[in-house]
Image (cartoon, rainbow, N blue to C red; front, side, top):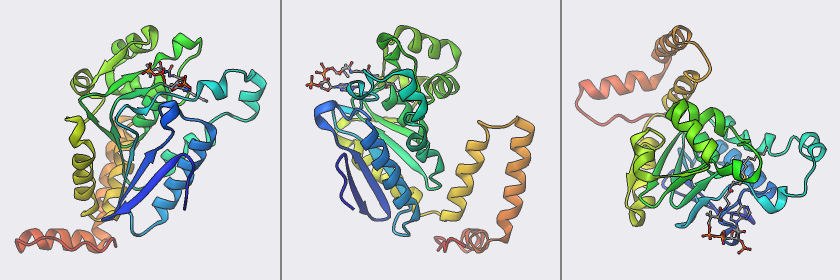
Length: 258
Ligand code: CO8
């Protein structure tokens, strides 16, 4: 399918979704978010996809929600359309793993989009920020909630209240990103990580996602019980038998996602 604001390529079981509004530093407008929701839904349903990467350009992952599109809207416009709600939630409905590959600016909605992915790998040029305060607004796609869970209250307050940018080294130090790589190697490295994930049982991969995400939604005791029950349940799968047999037979497992 052809998109106006995205470039999608599927290769070796990995879907690479590139945000493509170069003139606006990949600012997120309604068209882009709706196309992203469609692309994620399609990738989730496609047996040829086992891992998804969302990336931008070298200069910008995404410089935020599109300020031009929003600037003249009223409260009634925003509220009655529940602006961005359905499409920005599409990422949460995606069951396959999603890696954000961030180079350059990931600001406002761009930082929020990256944080909504399962994990973030960034280049050494990455700059994260929640500068909405400079526009007289607040983050609106989860930034005040997710950034606080990633980096703690003090740094989250600092970022949201001052609107300052955080560089890649700080982002790695405080746990916002899982790895930092040189800018020229970003996609090669992220594709290698995606390929590694794509080798696993898709069934188990989706279960891992559910378990880790559960830790954001529930108490520790309930989360641990959920994890233990899921662990027990996986003994009903062929992939558990295959994974453990392969280990004992000193060979690579052949998972069949069942
Ligand atoms: N929206 C629209 N256009 C943008 C955006 C944006 N967020 N960011 C950059 N652009 C455009 C610029 O207007 C410019 O276009 P033009 O050439 O037509 O003037 C082009 O991209 C290039 O930008 P700059 O010339 O500014 O490039 P610089 O290298 O000088 O600066 C920056 C790069 C620092 C990234 C700068 O562009 C900037 O500060 N951008 C805005 C960052 C920002 O404030 N982001 C937060 C936006 S608000 C938001 O994300 C809220 C999310 C929640 C929505 C919730 C809905 C429910």
